[in-house]
Length: 388
Ligand SMILES: Cc1cc2nc3c(=O)[nH]c(=O)nc-3n(C[C@H](O)[C@H](O)[C@H](O)COP(=O)(O)OP(=O)(O)OC[C@H]3O[C@@H](n4cnc5c(N)ncnc54)[C@H](O)[C@@H]3O)c2cc1C
Image 1 (cartoon, helix red, strand yellow):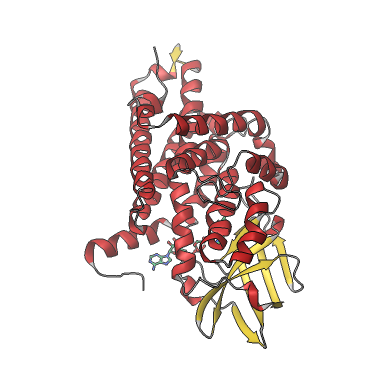
Image 2: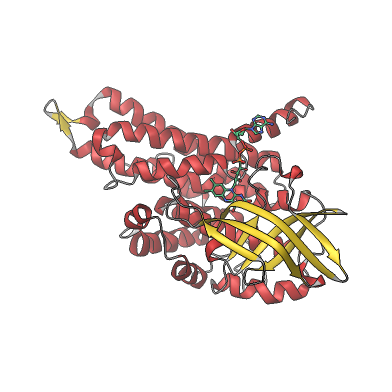
C-alpha cells in the first residue's frame, strides 16, 4: 500500500476535527471550482477575482482568523490549512485571500476606527468588497522606511501624493490601505479606490502569479476626509505587523504548492515507463521523492508549531521569518525537482508543476525576500542589524 507524502508521519493526528473539516471544505472547493480552470486562467493572465471572492466569502475564508464584523474567528492552524489548500490550487488564489484577510482587513481590524471597521470589514469578509495593501513603491521595496508617498494635512483633510507598485488585487479593489509618510512619521489610510486622483493599472507580462491581479497605484493629490487615516497605526511597525500576519499564511501556503507538485509527480512517475519500467522504480527517482517528502513533512511540522504558538498568543516576527524562509525555499526546491522527474512534460501547462514553480518565485520575493528574512534571523542570533 502506498501513502501520500503528508501521511507518512500520521500528521493528521495532530489536527483537531474542526481543523480537518475546514481543510476538507477548502480542498473540495479547490477541486471543484479551481482545478478545472486554473491552467487557463494562468495562461490568459486573468482570474475571476470578484466571483471567487464571493465564494471564498461564503465559506468564511476572508479574514477567517479575525473576530467580529462577520469574520469567522478561526484558529491560526485552521487558517493555515485553508492557505495550504488554496495554494495547492494556485499561489495566486492564496494571494487573493492573504491580501484581503491578513493585510487589508487585518490593518483595518487592528488599527482602524470603529466607523472604518463597520464600513469595510463586513463586506470584505463576505467578499463583496475587495481590499489591497499598498506599501511597496517603484523605488522602495525591501526598505519601506524610505517610502516617498506623502500625506499632508490641508485643513482637516489629508492629501496623498505618490505611487505604489506591485500591489496584489489593486486593479480589482474597492479599498486600498495605503502607507504614506506624514510630518509625524508613517501612517496608514483607508482609501476608497473611486476617490478622484486614484488610478490603478494592471501590471502585464508577468511570468509568475498570472492567476492573480497585480497593479500599480498612482495617487495624484488624492483628497481624503480626516477620518480616512487609521488612528491606531503609528509608525512603520504597523504595516510590518500586517506583514507578519500574511507571512504566517505563506508558511502554510507554500506547502500546498509543493504538495500539489509532489502529488502530480508521484502519479506521473508511477505511470511513465523508460527502459521497460516505471521511472518511479529507479533508485535515483526514489531518492528525489524521499527527500522531497521529508522536506514537506518538516515544513508542515514547522508551520504547525508556529501556528500553535500564534494560537497561544506567543508567536514572534523572527519565528515567522524562520517559517517563511524555510518553507518557501523548500517548496521552490521541490517544484524544481519535480519538474526534472516529469522531463519535457514538466514544462507543459498540462501539469501544474511549472505553474507552481513560477508562482513560488514571486512568493520567495514578496512579504520579505529570503535575504531579508535571513537578516531578521541573523540580527536575532548576533544582536547586530546588517540591513544597511
Ligand atoms: C506578484 C507580486 C505581488 C506583490 N504584492 C504586493 C502587495 O500586495 N503589496 C505590497 O506592498 N507589495 C507587494 N509586492 C512587492 C514585494 O513585497 C516586493 O517586491 C519585495 O518587498 C521586494 O522588493 P523589491 O522587489 O523592490 O526588491 P528590492 O528591495 O530592490 O530587492 C532586490 C534584491 O536585493 C536584495 N536586498 C535588498 N536589500 C538588501 C539588504 N539589505 N541586504 C541584502 N540583500 C538585500 C533583495 O533580497 C533582493 O534579492 C508584490 C510583489 C510581487 C512580485
